[in-house]
Length: 482
Image 1 (tube, rainbow, N blue to C red):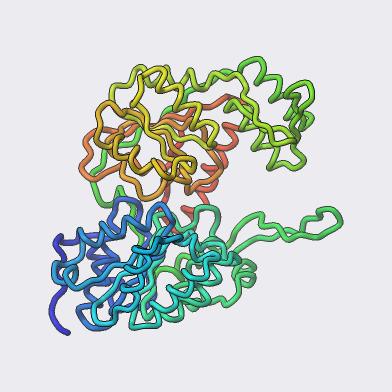
Image 2: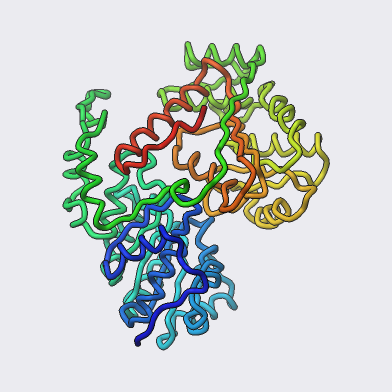
């Protein structure tokens, strides 16, 4: 097959540069920040390979909240000719009889080019999903792409072992897509690069890779000696190894976007919160009720419980959840009273989602709130649609784990972090929900926090991780929380 692949939209300059660098390479990483068009770039790359006869099929693995969006992206970005010929299959766990029959027809297709979309969670343990993925890649020449590729950063997880050890070897072309490839540390790169080609980094073992780039200290815990990573070295060498097989671009490198505005809102503790926080911090035990108490036996658990107390709830040792009087929700309502447009409120816990949504509806009326979290999987798509289209639905209350990826909520120009977590990737992804090409209104970000508590320590931890990511990718990230 010959000719020139002609997508409906011409690539932007940075996308054209990525395509030129990627041209003909079997393994490539698109480290393109949110809204820079990495999905279009990948589809254009597949389109030209398919037209040239080098690659017939495409499989995309993505998180559960994202993988379905690729079907719409294919309709939007692929050439008219390829869209007419392309067959699209969507993996769904627990498919009904009709959906199963349709999927079987898709898997049996051999003449037309095919696109298989599968959520990464299914590949953790679902035997049928694994068998379908292998059969698809073995049927003909194929490209295998992992979207939000930090989902395979844990080289020891079952899904990473299967994707890297079983699936990747059957794909003639391999691609990963990520806006932030090192959310936790430079070591996050190993699993992603192992999927592409171990020769890019030059290490067949994660432990040899870790020994090369991590500073390790031998710590003693309960009579055991445990190697602990305390720092990193030679990250410039790591960046050089990545250069040939990757393309990096930031949003601000591509468009004249309005500046982000960051603010903080201090929250005062209630007397009960102050008492419980002090007791938990000093003794790792806080009195909840006459017969119940909560304790933290390790530092991490203690920090989580301290943070929960600041948010107005905690769980005792019997698993019973207790609400604590707090001022954080009042502070949130005060901010929103002075805001005329739409807003996104990010929460770290399901308890907070329910509490905040109820408070907003009580203040602003029924129908003013949409939710997007693990507790409303069956209704969250409809609620998202109301938030995007209904002027009366002004507020989206969400967890970053559910709504932080792959969602376009640019109707909002205010983002409030009711609470933060230690997860840099969750923070970075969630911030991008309000950003969009051509948006003329500045996006404001407000962090609610209690001074001199773990709230501030969490923010500092996030800032330290940003510095670390910048050292690996050469991004020079801005300080973005304050």
